[in-house]
Length: 308
Figure 1 (cartoon, rainbow, N blue to C red):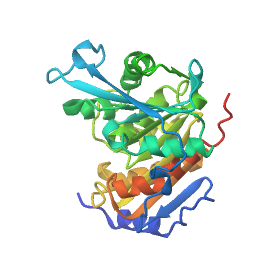
Figure 2: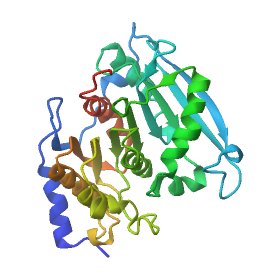
Figure 3: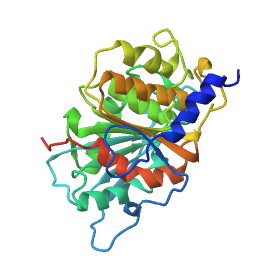
Figure 4: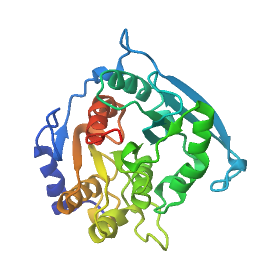
């Protein structure tokens, strides 16, 4: 079913939101249509480089995801900043779809940690499950976060020689598309472990449903956020003008633009600290948008962290 006139009007209003600047506080904004790459993505002379340790997890060894379509390997990359002191508890970013962050997040963190714009933190970038990516990321349950906590992070600590903080204020989830759905689901089900969420083109739509979530990740808009007590979460959400399902009726619950903008409105109404960014002239999880916005988005999501 195509988008209704009301849907089109709802989306059109997003283009008139104020511009997203470094002075932006909580609220709704626009970016684009030009997307110069943020300077934090360039290596700088004199800035110490962290190391990236990569290891492989075999599905046959996993209790949570042994491989529904046969065995597979999952690569995990762990970024450790040069300033990390062995034996100390480090704040951590847990990123879905490692391949999407492996080649820009380490340099961004090098620069921003050096400039004291972010705490000295570790990033654990986890590959998806290939053919079972949607099963892992789009399922609205605590299964994926338990997999991360029980299987991935202990291995990451061992392989990289780090200790990761258990303080939820010191833990952030990050993802794009279905990976963003996973990022939100991790924090929603385990706010005792994660308080910070960063999402690009979040798949908060009815893509993978079941008895516990009949509307899939659209449950966040229809039921979960509206009906639950406010959780201690801080969120940054992005969606693009030409994102998935933009011409689909919002009533189908498969329109990424209306889903994200409606989630932002709920966050505002419930009093959550959040930013929502609507990217003009861009599509689903476009690299130019991420390379333009990620440093400032990280800075926003980590506001208020005291280092405790």
